[in-house]
Structures are given as structure tokens and as C-alpha cells.
Image 1 (cartoon, rainbow, N blue to C red):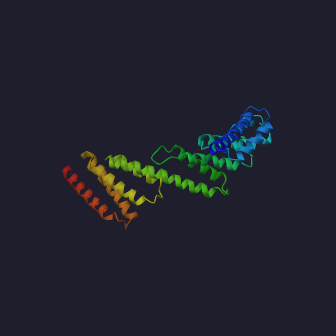
Image 2: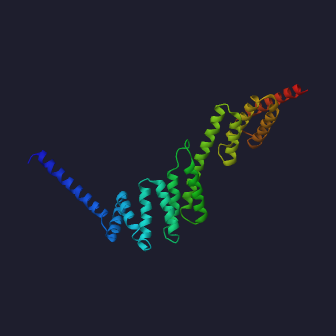
Image 3: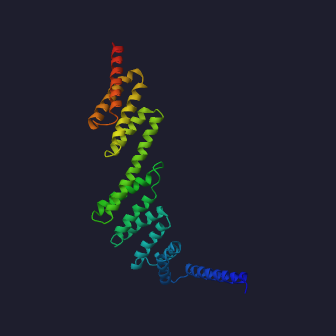
Length: 272
């Protein structure tokens, strides 16, 4: 028997085997034997064949409604969504599971996975952060609800990670205003960043950028507004020097104080 013939026979056997497996699954999909469907759904789940398990769970969950088997089937069904990276659906079904089975042994895990699915939807800081904030709020609720859960440590870690992402986004937006010479918006955005993230490791730099933004805003303002804005700049510099007495920015901050005071004297003389 030549090699080509042998290859053809082997390939044919593989095709037959594949067809047989497919036929078995297709038969299951049209079966009305709910016990068999549930058994096979669990088998597919254990074999990590998530799509097949999902389809069979969909077929039997309604039939087992009100029975103990439905609880675990629904829980596994939510996980099949998650394992297929259908995170929006996974979050929905984990939440629905927790609401449907409030006394379930899987309730805590389902609550966590609802928010973890949203965490997986959290995009780069450059994009809309709706899911990031949703995951943060959800994990915080989880921590408050289950303060002794072994998942609390991980939830806190993920919250910190996502808050850093939000902070980076806020910084980049404020920086963009500064680069575009929209100094009023830059000043306000940097101030909001410190308000939202008071423990930011970049607080020193942000306070420095508030000074620069406000000083530039004053310089580019109409004459009637300049005095107030130079005075505000001096207040920001005083706050900076008080909080960061040994900063590398201090020489430049002192220079801005001197320039602001000089401009205030000029404005005062013009007023007289």
C-alpha cells in the first residue's frame, strides 16, 4: 500500500470520527431527554467545550426551573459566557444568578464574578472608562458586603489598578489642555485630579503644573482679570512650597512668584 493511499485512509477515518462527534452533538440539540442534556452539558463543561455546554444548558435550564439542578446549571451557564470572553453577558448572568438564588452557596462567587467580568471590559485609559468605574463601584460593594471574603485582597488590588488607570486618563486630559494652551481648563483639570486622587504619587508634579497653568492663564488674560489670577498663582506657589519644601521645582516656583509680584505692581501702578 503506497503512502498516498495510507494517508487517504487515515484522513478518511478522521473525517468519519469528526462527523460522528458532530452527529452526536446535533442529536443532543434536538433531544427532549432533559436528564441526558444536563448530563452532557456538565460533561462538555468539564471538558472546557464552553460553546457546546452553553447551548445545552440553555436547553435545560427552563425545564429544571424550581428544581435543585437548575441552580448549578445556571451558575455554570454564566461561566460559559465568561470563558468565551462574552463579558457583558457574563456580568449580566452572574448578577441574575445572585438575584435568583440569594441563598446559594455560589452567591458570593457570582457577586465577585459579576464585577470581575466588568473589570475585563475595562479598556486602555485613552478610551471611555464607564466599565472601569462600574467595576470599581462593584468591587467596593463586594468588599462592603463580604468583608471577610478571601477575595477582598484581590478586589482591593484591582480597585487600585483601575484607579491608577483613571488617574492616568485624568492626567493626560489635563496635560492635553495645557499643551493646547487652554490654561483655564488645564488648571481646573489638574485641580480636579488632586481632588479625586488626593494620595496620587504624582501630586507634587500636578501642583507644579497647576502653578504653571494658572500663571500662563493670568498672562494671557484681559487686563481686568490679571490681578486676581496672579494672586491665585501666588497662593498656589505658597501651598506648593509648604507641602514640598525640598522640591526640585522650587527654583522655578520662586521665579513664578517673583514674576507674579512684579506684574501685580505694574497693574497697581496702572490703576493709579
